[in-house]
Image (tube, rainbow over all chains, first blue to last red):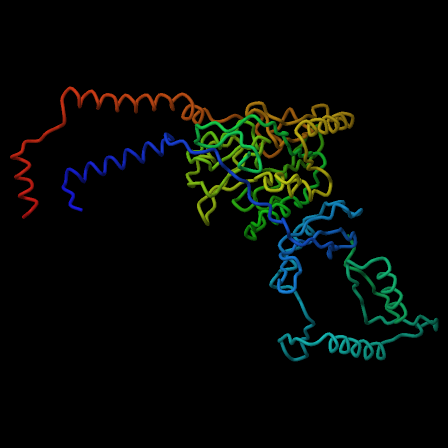
Length: 195
Length: 295
């Protein structure tokens, strides 16, 4: 297309005028808007319990997919379970952000051991982990177990061992934990669930 | 048929009126400052629902974290230590968008459809249409919107419009473990507030009251305050918020004047063309110029 100087100016001014008029609101557009699509529609809802403390609030965990054979689920949202009598849908800041803990890069997903003389963590199996811990416990208990105190009173203590129980343990789980550890003679016994 | 899940009341920079025939329930969020323990569950629930995460900040010697609203923190707890009636009081206010009935942000916004007010009272930003000019920040009487450093678009609390559209409470209200954030119809929230105020008055807070400022036509996020006569105590909550006169002038009186001036210029040009004809240069000069250009 051959455009001379004058035509070029005409095209420019027409374009500029048209666009300024449109920008100034003279081109009416339909009043349309839409909210963000509800992100949980058809997500899989799973009831769970918050792992942080002994209040054990009910959670609703939402994940992608419908659990069909070829669809791999991923958690997309967590909120309180309104049907749980403990929290009735509410959550504390830790519980409300529990998805970030589940999906944290730093989350420990398997047993690891750092053997003496090294600074490297080595992945081991659950079987090896439990066996290793048991052997250490047995060796320590055999070495340090106190049957009688200096007055000759039977005490059956294992003073060199301490246990920290999990926070989300139920009453029954807590009962079993205490029972087992006291049987071994453990005196220092606590739980993370002191809130 | 509605073309959207929530009916629209008004839309930024749009003169076409929205359909108004259907009646929609007005909703509101009530923040009972006297019941808040400042746990920040609302802040976390907000980020979790809206898929935004703020940067890990640093301690500024106060509990406020982050210290101000950001494009990712649409709500923040503000902690004020004040002495009232000879007692030290810790006033914790959940700050965020108030969802005004007369929104200054929407009035100031020049981009069509970037800010929408739904008939239920929610004022929502549509980032697709946002041009990042920041006029909403100037227009807001509560200093709420923030421009993202990532995409230069304005963000703020949506009152979880996506949840409300399917009849769920906003994420913050659902999470609140002390029930300091309540959600429901605006009428119900006023009734609930009245009960709380009666209770507070019985406990010696004579000036307890509801914060629903008339200067912005009322809000859809309201506060129950123990000292409703001094909202400034609550980390500078404005006593009489109103849209800046600059915005009102610019979008009110000056708008028709500017349109008139524009029409005048167009009309003047037409008359000038009719009376004087087109501006014709001398043919000789033009030829000379063209010759020079060709060289």
